[in-house]
Image 1: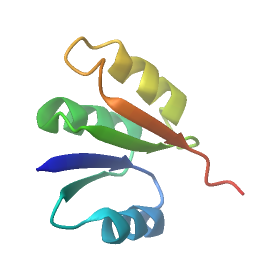
Image 2: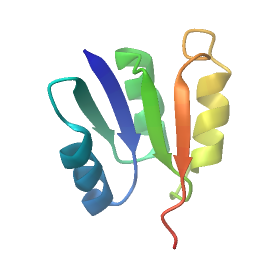
Image 3: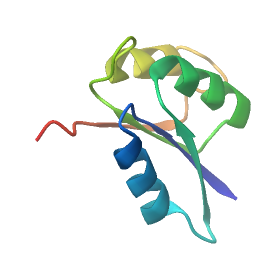
Image 4: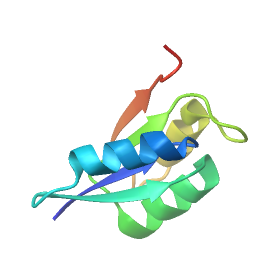
Length: 85
C-alpha cells in the first residue's frame, strides 16, 4: 500500500488531508511536528511526505533537509506546503 506521511502542527489540516487522501490505495500517517515526522518517516518509509512550511520547533524546510540527508529516505518525494494564505 502507498503510504503518505502528513506533518502539520494544525490538527484541522492534518485531519482534512487524511480524509481527502485516505482510500484503498493510500495509507495516511499523521505527525504533529517536525521531530515526530522525522521519527515516523524513518519507521514507516512513506512514498510521499506532505509537510507544513511553518511549524514551531523544527520548520518544514529543516525537516526536508534532515530527511533528504538520510540515505534510506533520500529518494522520498517531499512536498513542502505553505498554508499561510
